[in-house]
Length: 326
Image 1 (cartoon, rainbow, N blue to C red):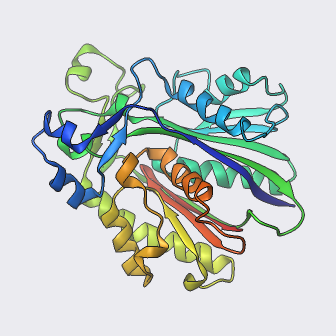
Image 2 (cartoon, one colour; image 1 turned 30 degrees about the vertical axis):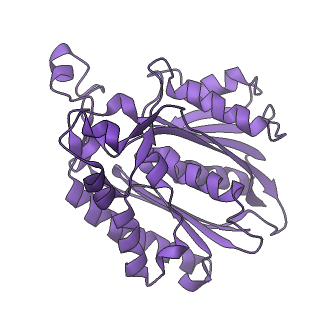
C-alpha cells in the first residue's frame, strides 16, 4: 500500500505588508531585509481572521478542484497558532465540512516542520492500512505572535495555509511518497514563544514584556538549520537508494534564502534545484513548505518522473523530509 499526493491547495490573505511598509515602523530598510533574508513582502491576515478561518478557505479551494473530503479517515492540522486551546483546529475543519464522525481529527505542534510532520504521519497511517484518505492542513497566523517592535523577527514572518489530500494506491505511479525522515532535538532556548502556555499564562505584565511573541537567536538557528537540512536530505535520499543528483526539485521550509544557498553549497547542488518563493510570502512557519509545493505544482514546475524532496526545520527543535516520485 502506497501513500500518494492526490491534490494540493493553499490560501494567502489579501493584505500585503511590504518591506517599505516596515521601514515606516522599524529601524530597517528594504535593501537590508532583502540582502539578509530574501524577503520582499509577506501576507498578513485580518484581525478577525483566525488560523481556523484561513484553513477553511484553503480547504474550500481543494474542494473546488473536485475533491471529496467528507469520507476522509483523518484530518491532521499542523499549527503553532491554533484558534483555541481546545477544541482542535482539526475538529473545527471536520465540523465545517461534515466529515464522518469515525474520522481521526487532531492537531500537531512542530512549528516550521509541521507540514512535514503531518505529511509523514499521514503516509504512515495509509501505509499501515489504518487510513485510506487523509487531509492535512498547515495553518499559521504568525502575525499574532510577532513583536512588531523587534526588527529581527518582525521582518521575517507572514500568514498562510497549505493543504494536501493524501490517498492510497497500490502502484508506483505519479505522486507516491517513497521515503521519509523525521527527527527532533530538545532545545527551548534558541527559538521559543515563552508566554501563553501553563508555564507562563497570559497576564498583563507578560503581555507588556512581549513574552507571547517569538524569541529567536538568529545566528544559532541559522547554523543549526544548515547542518540539519544537509543531514536529513542526505539521509532521505540514501534511504530511497538514490543520489543527490537524482533530485529534480528541492522545496525547503522558506525561512531565509541564505540558508537555502548554504544548504545547496553544502550538498554540492546548484541553487536552481531549490524552489524559492520566500520573496512573496516570508516565513509562514508550518505552512511554508506546502505553500511552495502547491505553487510549484500549479505552475507545472513538477513534471512526471521528477523526484521532489520536501524538507523543513523548526522550533523544538524539529525537522523532517519527504521524497516524492512524480
